[in-house]
Image (cartoon, rainbow, N blue to C red):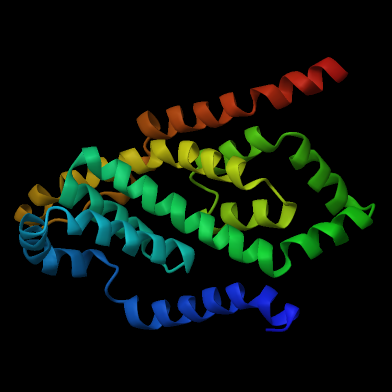
Amino acid sequence: MPPTLRRWLPLIIIATGAVLGLVLLRDRLSFESLAENHDALLAYGAANPLLTPALFIAAYVVVVAFSIPGAIWVTLTGGFLFGVFPGVLYNVSGATLGALLLFLAVRAGFGERLRARIDAGDGAVRRLSDGIRANEVPVLLSMRLIPAVPFFVANLIPAFLGVAVWRFVWTTLLGILPGALVYTWVGAGLGEVFARGETPDLGVIFEPYILGPLLGLAALSLLPVVLKKLRRA
């Protein structure tokens, strides 16, 4: 296989999977689909207690790796099927593994070449890149903790900047845990929501009593950056 094709093959697979997933799963990753199939999902989970978690994590990996819209419904399903615990562990595991696959595919495709081009420049992009690299862990954690940063964007930026794999993995796992816990908790209560014929409040993460602590954690993760700036002043 030519080196160029080998480098681009992971991205080709990701792009193809993303298109297929968008076409085939667009209507399946929704509240309506979950509401229609919740009894069947519970029955399957009860009949296959060992296989169901493995299939669920694999499905979550696929959704995240291919950036298929609807990951939030997968998270809710994890809470609905498995409860807050171990549901949150399954959700975080699937999301982290999927993010890792996307990160590796992007880095293999053009991450290293893009990083070299950024390093060769001397403009605003180079200064921004240097600033992020000098504070990798705080920046990576804050991107995960702040709900306004799209998940797939937080997977791409580290790949472009050449972040170490192990650092990407543990900051992803730790950074998404609070938000995953919130939505897993919402998913665990979906049985009552279905019984009442209602729709879950997905804006709960933006409520002050939840958003406040998340922003506080994000600010805490950036504290070393602030302290470093103050020492240099």
